[in-house]
Amino acid sequence: MENNKLIAKFMGEKEVCTGMYRLEQHKYLKRIPYEYGCEEVCDFELSEMKYHSSWDWLMPVIEKINRDTDCYVFAEDYGTNINYAYQEAVKSIKKYNKQKR
Image (tube, rainbow, N blue to C red):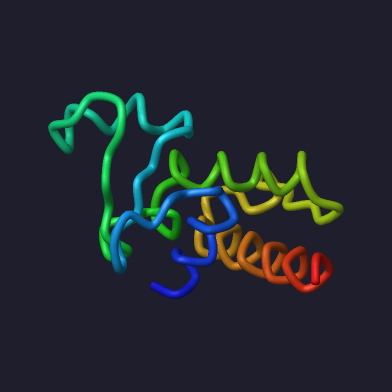
């Protein structure tokens, strides 16, 4: 869960109350509304976030890492191993945050 919180912060998500984040600006939201019953904005608890298990959630993170940092995550290198790609994304965000300080 801590890694999903780290990713949410990196993605610029707003914590609307303790452990609840508002996801507003990501491509995968277009696929979420029907599943979660909302239209444009969805609030998610950390336990509901799927960065670790869904390519739809993880790919925007990888794109932002590759675009906005000097760290690179090559998702195609991981094939279908989302866990490895997730761990590499987390490692890259931690490195980026350390460099920012």
